[in-house]
Image 1 (spheres, rainbow, N blue to C red):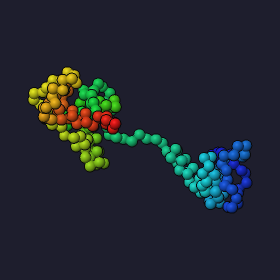
Image 2: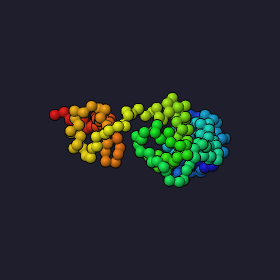
Image 3: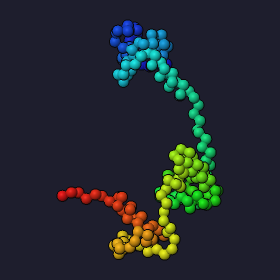
Image 4: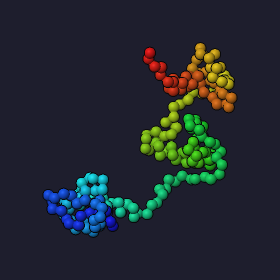
Length: 196
């Protein structure tokens, strides 16, 4: 294995380090590095000085890692190919999704498809790793059932200024949110005013 060009002579311990990247010189092989005393300084192409022992260990580790066959880790998740019964958007209410039949296919926001059974397995993995599942990681939402104020555009929100946070709003697509959630989101994304 050729590591680069270098001086042919082995330097004395007090001499300059063996240079691995000198153009026009004989190449230094791994076999040549193995013949050097372990504490011989070696300068890499990047300018870093290491011992011959460290360079050999690093080269052997890279060789070992690259010679191992690559095997995809088995996740245990199915990879359904059919159309998704449900496309999950960011912020989707997961308890309702997890109550669906295990064979239902859901499409995640990144485009990956999983069955509801896979989501249950993912929830169990999250509980082991982080101490909470994917459902507990979501903040609990208030009950959105019952009557709702239909809002078509942002101008209609002005009339709701005095209403309580528990007021349920519904947009033209049927998506429901409480006025309190909307206010919290607006506050979190508001651009701070500059001091004059």
